[in-house]
Length: 301
Ligand code: SF4
Image (cartoon, rainbow, N blue to C red; front, side, top):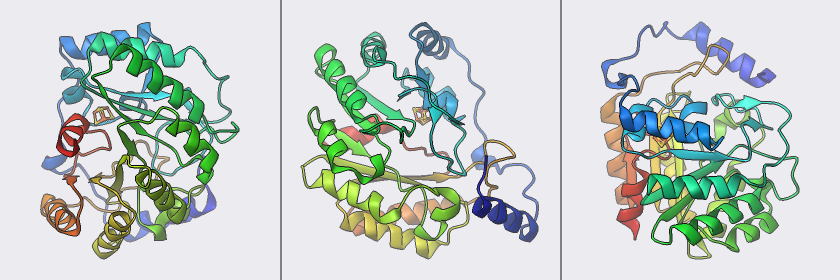
């Protein structure tokens, strides 16, 4: 389901760009396998949980799951928004599963995670956008695994400070909210989001002394100078950690790749970002928001 802006953009990119053919070598990944991989997969099925690793077809799934790390996706598997890059199912969401926080906490314990990342679909039809389920999940994980650091990667909750307040009843260690792309591309990439609203969200939590994090994709139509401007906006909003990775088109109905960004450009973003004031910049082609998240947490605490 793509909107008119996304359709026009897709046609423009397809018309103007040389066909990209196969991916460059720096984007090749291993096929998932191994006993740890199978253990994580079995656990997710047993606990009836979703991971963004699978739903978003993350290219790092072999590496992460073999290290027994995964990013839990709560509030169901159906999203109320229609972002042009995302592979998560769209439509009318399921009923809220009030037992989900308990099963996530049990799984964190079973995997004995040092650091956990919890994200969710957008649930714009809910009064608090699902903030209370995030809060409950954090509380139950703290109860079972007090030494585990907790990162939540949240939707924008339509900018509701009431929803932010619900999160602060059980604050995470790291508050992550992705800007995803530069403001010029919001109408095609994140049509129901607002760039300033997302920056305000990061600043709101920073003012309450949380470590903050954000991430973007490149290769979806932005220019390098726009990326550098976005990075300055994030630093000025109090963002501590930044992730930058290559956009990969999950299926033919999603926005096309505009270009494969070379590794040198990722390196440039990292160097400039550290000079600007980020504490951590993870920037390379296969980086995703939760990639090496446990290392980021160690670096800021
Ligand atoms: S990078 Fe994140 S989403 Fe991808 S497999 Fe690793 S934990 Fe999952």
